[in-house]
Image (cartoon, rainbow, N blue to C red; front, side, top):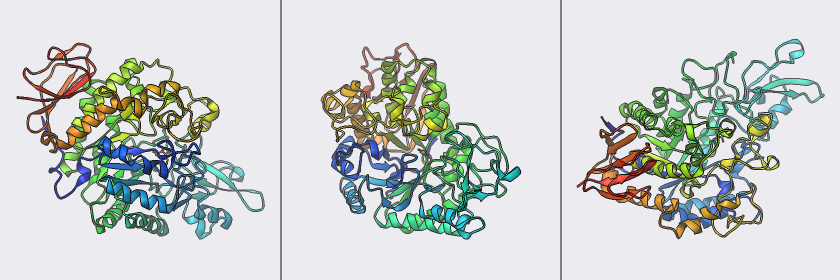
Length: 553
Ligand code: NOJ
């Protein structure tokens, strides 16, 4: 079977096959020594990213925020949080990234704002029925005295999706909707001011040269006008749409918003792009976000969620091409991000325990050596496929999930809101180890905001740089070959027959990628030249849990 995602990247459509590096800025590099990563640290490490060989960076929200949800509670979209830097530093960063040949993607959070945002403060101060409240979803409560929430919707981090306000005279007032934490009130996207404000925010950053936006909760903006009751899964932090009509996920109305956004991006020079974070379980529904007049790409969470098994991986790949091929949108591939258990720790769980959240998997023992071997193979699979790839900071070092953070340091709202049953996402957000023998491993500052494990001494950039067989050097080589090998440049791939437990596909020019998910070594075609392999190929055989890029003679 042959897949084609779209016409090859011509005319500078860089996003069709870009490698995008995700920067969780608070944990990337600390330039001012306060224990929190910042723009100064990021600027200083730009040469590292250039040498790694990625095409673009996506930065998690850097806007002014009280940090109730790691910056996804934005108080002012036009200002960089003072803990992270200044507007001037941000502008300098964008210019320097461009000088290094790197594009810059910011994170836009349109579903909700911080409860400290000027609009929400005005809404609370202005009282029921006021125009200020119209920009949010305020409702009277149900039951005697309005003591019960307006409906039974649940919040992604646990608990009800409604919080009751207190009126200025101290009596209990209306309730407001928050699909995430109470500090993140949802905006009312039926309100023209909300639409106009976000269009203006996009222009503000596009005017500064930013190349695109990752759209947070892209499937969640529009709500059913009646806010009807509906059973949503408790603790589904992504508010996945399961198909069928859902009162707040993947509603048809979101597409009008993105058509308007696309028109704005298209006014600007130089291929400005959008990438949707849309947790929509049906690939055909996800493809609707990528119609030619809507968004450019969307994260492929089916791939991220697939267990380390040939059949499951192949199905995720096939489904993605089947949905995207007809509309000419490129596939995307992602293994980890700041919301899920790092994939070394997912793939290292025998029995393929593949839960996204630490709470779901932590009772299953983990084998980090196995996880690392599989993560190396997964890197070659991911970077060998046509389309764009998203790499989460630290995966190029083989970092694993820190599963034993002491409860007192946890900051993810999931921990509190789940009643201390799920530690949440801090374990994948621990600051990067750069150099040296002990924490803070060159991150900067004496004490990083989350403690790093001592065992990361073998996973620092400095340590791995010096070892030809390190994860870092595997990623560097893979990204270099992906850029320079003409066979990997096109948008096509074709499956090649392979025994059970093995996936093999060809790209252009006789380049073949083989991934062995089985335990037994797999014989490779005779005389093939090994371009890159995740584990040593001996006697022409690819070991289990390994992958190789070959050039066939
Ligand atoms: C998805 C983001 O990736 C996650 O970190 C955040 O908590 C929610 N959206 C809410 O903004």
